[in-house]
Length: 327
Image (cartoon, rainbow, N blue to C red; front, side, top):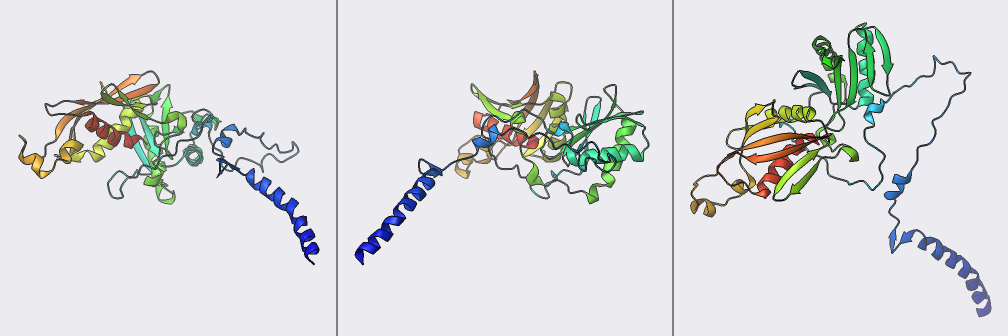
């Protein structure tokens, strides 16, 4: 009886060895294989091709995605995962479906939807207004009409788009007004991007907060006009609390803002520190937010414009707050 059991037990040994080897191959150094980097080696598959005998009028792109939405180059390293930028409900910072931006004599619209959703609306606008479409290039995000060129691209904040009405690089105000009204009338039926969608742009367009010596700065991979327009919009909305944070003046010619701001050092002073200091109450101070063009990017700096102290930690805290409007 024992020999029979031994023979049966021996039959399971090869299976157990195979199972052990197989399971061992599923892990590295005791952990399951992290496939995060594997996706960076993925290559695009060739597009599907319909037969030439098809009825071309029956087969079209149902949801064309403009190439303008695919900004940046192919990822060659693991993505850096960051938490979304949360905008408090009721703060007044939640984007409307369509908003206007302006820098100098240029104006454009920011739509709270990605380019793939906005493109069909631009086509509908051109048809409904009988603008006389001469060329439509979804890959470039451009519709050329007899009256103006409609241009579409991704906005600075993710999940949003920028739309321009131009002719010869000049803003066509009447066209932009009509398009703003057209898109605004559809806002009730559109799914407006929530504050949780306000995350960083793709890897190639991620802004960086960096330290240069004792100073902090923000490198933003966008033209200074676009950065100025976005900061002007959100500072006007958010810096409205006198004594805490307040927008005092703007200088569009030099791309500067003068703000009143209570630094983190001042906010965090405890009662004992206040009693034994020259200031018997917490005080704000004037700070200049300066935008400087630097090739294809823009550098944002915070410069103390008062006699009060402004530590590197205070500088970084303010820059991180302001940079949050662009994520």
